[in-house]
Length: 362
Image 1: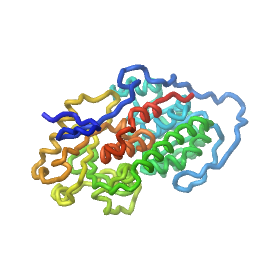
Image 2 (image 1 turned 180 degrees about the vertical axis):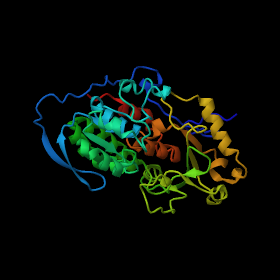
Image 3 (image 1 turned 180 degrees about the horizontal axis):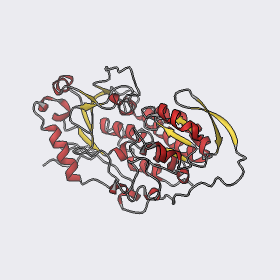
Image 4 (image 1 turned 30 degrees about the vertical axis):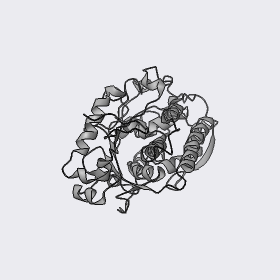
C-alpha cells in the first residue's frame, strides 16, 4: 500500500497531498457569526455607485447592500470571507446544510437561510422573495436569465467569477465596495498578493514541469478558460492540454473536458494532480489518508500508465477542492508550486496561508 507523500527530501512512490489549517483540522469551531436578515424598514439614504463587473457590465447599486444571493459556494465563501456573511439571505444547494451533511459545521450560519436549489437553474421565486438586492453570479452561471427574471423585483446582477484567481483579485475592490467591507476585501487582496510574491520569488528561473490535471472523474481534464488551468500555470507548471481552445469560456466544458487516456500517456506528464476521491470533490472535514493513498494508487495502476514519468517518479497527487479552491484557487496555485518544486518551496507552509483564509473578518 502506498504511503502518503510529504513535501520532504524523502518521497515515497505515490504522492497524496491535502492541507488543512491547524484550527480546522483540530475540529475547533470555525470563526463565523450567525446569519442576520437585513431590514428594509428604514429610509434608504445609501449612495448609488456604478460597479463595472467582470464582463464589463456597468451596474448601479446602492451601497453597502443589505442582502445578497450568491449563486454557488465559491461566491458564498468570498462574501463571508470579506466579513459580509450576514447579508446572505438565500443560498444554493451546494451550501444547504440539510442536503449536504458534510457542510453542517462549515456553513452552520446559513442553516435557516432559504435554499434556491440548483445553482445552474435556481428557483427564481425563492430568490425574488428572499429580499436579495443583488444576484452575485459567476460567468458560467445563468446570469442572463437572472437579469431578465429578477429585474422586475429590483434585483441587480453582478458577475464576478470567484473561482477564477485573476478575476477575483481584480474585482476584490469592487466586491468590498458593494458590501461596505473594504477592509475585509483588502485583507484578502493582501493574502492573494503575498502568495503571488512567493510564487514569483520561488519559481524564478525554473523550467516548467508538465502537468496532467484530472477533475473529479477519470480522463476528465480542464483547459484554458478554467480556473483549474490557471492554477497550473500560476504554480509554475505547463498543462499538457493547454493547447486546447474552446471558444465559449463560460461553458462548463473548459472545466470538464474529456480526453483520450492514450493521449495522456503520449503527452507523458511530469506530475499528475487529481481532484477528489471517487466522485467526491469537496470535503469539509479532513479526508482519511488511506482513502487518499488508495485513490492515488488507483490512478497510478491504470493500464499502461506505468510508462508515464509522473507515475514512475511517484508524483501523483490527490486533493480536496475545499482546500485547493480557497481564495479563488490562489491557494491551489501555491499547492501546485509546492508539489512541482518541493525543494524551492521547502520553507513555504501551506497551512499558514490556508489558516489566513479562514480568519474571521467582521
